[in-house]
Length: 377
Ligand SMILES: NC(=O)c1ccc[n+]([C@@H]2O[C@H](COP(=O)([O-])OP(=O)(O)OC[C@H]3O[C@@H](n4cnc5c(N)ncnc54)[C@H](O)[C@@H]3O)[C@@H](O)[C@H]2O)c1
Image 1 (cartoon, rainbow, N blue to C red):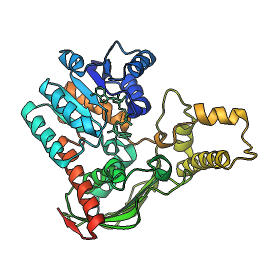
Image 2: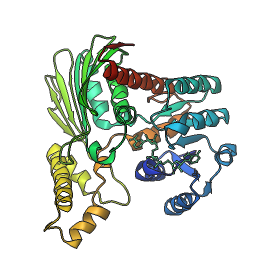
Image 3: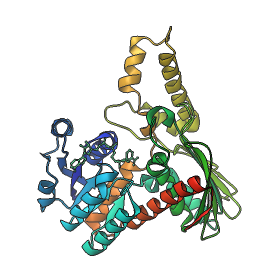
Image 4: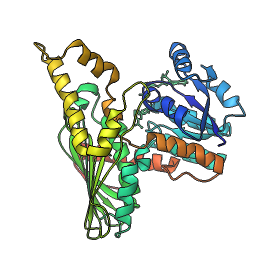
């Protein structure tokens, strides 16, 4: 199989947990060059993943005529600028979310993409999550989604401590705004936010299609609680998805009432959860999450943890990553990007315009929280 030659800019957190291992195993990808301005990190990542070239200069990577597409995973302050530069150099671009820090910068990317005639895929990976592709298919076969409830809740109180309100919306809830637009197949007409405390809030949205949606966004959950849950009602049936692992279908003739989805793996970590999720579904996920929470709870509360050295080593070095053990579509999206370059076809993924709309929605959501008013779009 011909492989698409790609380069990666940014070898930080998301590249280590997703892009580097995925670029090495995606069937349509040949990762030729990695780039990071942090030279020590760059050398380590090049060696670990045996990437042929490494450079600290973005221009070196972009000047290589063999490189057809570039993955940009730097941070929102640089992602739009680097995307525009890569487009101008004739590359297709996969850029992490959020596309940019401001709506105006997102617009500049849309314009640059139009001029370059190359495509831009924004890393809204949920559009390639197998469980969400199936849920959307079921809903669309029954007249489309009419009413949706989505929960996203995690230990943000732990890892996002000190961030001002708004950061979580731009970094986390942006995924959900995009996923809902894609599932509903329509634009949001209005959004309203009610909030009990910072980062503990609900959003209600109305779409042009007539569909309504509620997002429960909470940064105050614990590790034993699943991070995401989707519930959607179509014409007269419904579907639920528990954290990408278990889909249940109700009222659709001939459709199995339950489908389980294997998880996602990382080469540094064990893969048993994949088999457990495909045989036990959500029960397996709850057990894994509970194990993680009990370990953490015991660690933090001192005393006799009951955790011997072996358990500690297992939890820190071998257990799957909590946020990355379910299949949210990262590998599928990167491979699809490479395949579309080869076949010269438009990706079925979030475009630069979708990145722009997600940014608009994030800013509208923040405005509604601040003013207490419905924001019309
Ligand atoms: N899709 C997802 O599930 C997901 C998950 C986590 C993070 N993200 C997104 O991925 C992006 C990156 O996040 P992260 O946690 O990996 O950040 P990070 O800070 O850990 O890594 C960014 C890397 O980019 C490098 N870099 C920055 N500017 C550069 C430049 N001009 N040239 C070369 N290298 C440069 C930095 O040195 C750093 O190593 C963010 O936008 C984040 O929101 C997406």
